[in-house]
Amino acid sequence: MQPPVTGPQKAAAADNTGVDVAVDNAGDDRAVARVRLAGRDVAVEALRAHPDRFTALFGRARSEVGHAVCLCRTDPPVRLGRCRSGRYHLANWPDGGRQHDPSCPWYRSHSAVSGRSACTEAITTTDTGTSIRLSTPLIVRGASATPTSTPARARTGTSTSRGAMGPLALLHYLWESAQLNVWHPGQGQRTWRTCHTLLGEQTSGCRVNTLDLADTLWIVPPFRPEIADRVHAAWDRFLRRLATTGSGRRRGLVLGEIRTTETTDYGVRLRLAHQRAALFTTAPLMEQTHRSYPSVFSSGSRQVSWFR
Image (cartoon, rainbow, N blue to C red; front, side, top):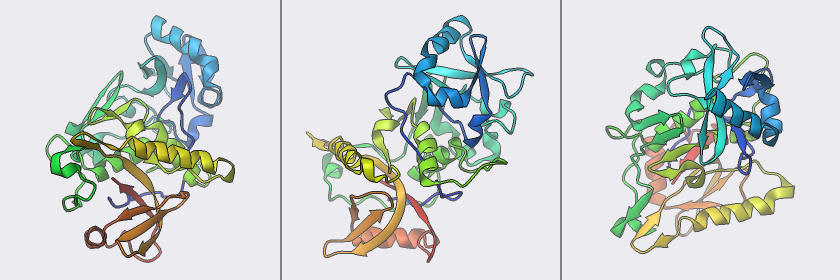
């Protein structure tokens, strides 16, 4: 388990699976953002609402021009877009975020003035996607593969080894990529539904330790009674992917807000906001986490946390 990231902690979002065109990295200003696809100007809001209507247009832009163009500025125009596994995505080209206008939803500050500067060696971005090296193994073998193994002491730093980032640094990266660390004029209240959507978009086209992040990370969906059973079934499928096979066991990452912690006869039960199923950990690990991050568990604080 890792502690929460600092920054806005209200808000999250519907997943983007099952569509041919997805828009990554767009913030809440997306309603006024426009892009050019094969000579046609399209509102980002329309792309998000009806992605299937623009598949052919995006394909033309890819074959005729090579990319889409963000219209936040024209000096020079900023390229957007990549194709991975047959699906098109609007996303920044490598190191292209700082070329956008500061009011643009795809704008990113230079890594030198953000937390990314501490883990740039762990992130590789190309026009086909992003690859991240995580210091925590996502596939463990041998004695470490047993579910009762106790993880090494949590570290408070964002980067744990040269060329790799820790889980907290990954959370910072996703939070910043989703622009949850900034607030634009005219934005309304952020809910967990907003955060879920924006964070979920960052997993598309992203691989961590060679595994698809979308399959490795569970971002707790916002609770809706009418889909509660479907969400619980999806959680069960996520857990089944983590089953031990042979000498190895696959790990997963869970991102959600801690609602309560309860001591049991066998350890500690953690209940997450919006999620029916609880998580469990050992008392020593929970005590260690409290000592490492006392401010996180202070009275009244909201705890948006990693679990692995």
